[in-house]
Length: 248
Image (cartoon, rainbow, N blue to C red; front, side, top):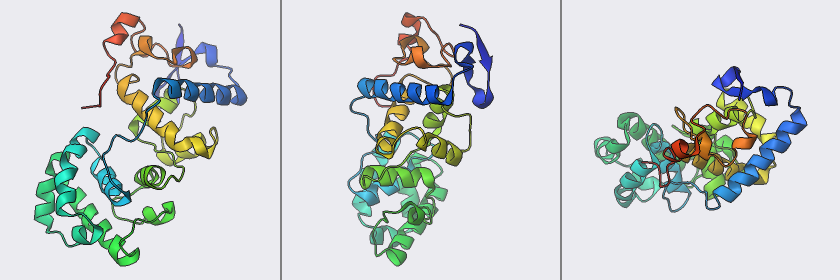
C-alpha cells in the first residue's frame, strides 16, 4: 500500500488523503469499538488502593514501567500509608524506597512536596478537580487525569507516549503537544468514553502498536489505520511482536 509522510511522523495511506472530518470521527469511533472488543478488561495497570496511592504511583511511573512501580509501592505504602506520614518522611529513606523506579531524587522531592500540599491545603485529601491537582508538585495534566478517571470516575484523557503515538498513527490528530492532543481527542469522543479510551489505546500501544516496530499484520484495526505498513504486515511475522502479558 502506497504511503506518504505527514506531521507527527505518521505514515498516511493515500486511501485516507481526502478523508472528511465526519469520516475521520466515524472511523475513530469504530476503532474505539473494535478496541473495546479486543481489550474488554482494559484498566490502569498500576496497583492502588484509593486516590492517594494512585496519585503517588502515577508520579512514580514517569520514565519507568508500571511493573516496576508495582514492585516498589507495597513497601512504600506500608511505610507511609497516609499523606501525613509521607509529608514527614526522611528524604533519604524515601529515596532508598523508590530508587528502583529511577530519577528517585526528583521523585522523592515531588512526593514530599505533594504530600505536604495535601496536608496543608487539602486537609490530607486528594482533590477531585483537575485545576487543584495540577497545583501539586510533580503533578501535570496526565497524572491528574489518571487520578480523576480511575479514583473518582471523573472523565479524563490520559495523553502518555502510547496514547499520543496511536492517535497520530490513526490520523485523529497531527498535534504533538499533549494538551492540544487532549483537547482535539476530547472533541471526537463523548466524555463518558475518555477514561476507558485512554486505557484501550495505552493497552494497544503496549501490546501491538509498538513505537519502533508495530505488529501491523496482527492488528485488529489494521483496515481502519492510515499508518498500516509502518511495521511488518505479514501475519506470522507480526504475531511474534505481540506482547500478551503486562509490559515488563
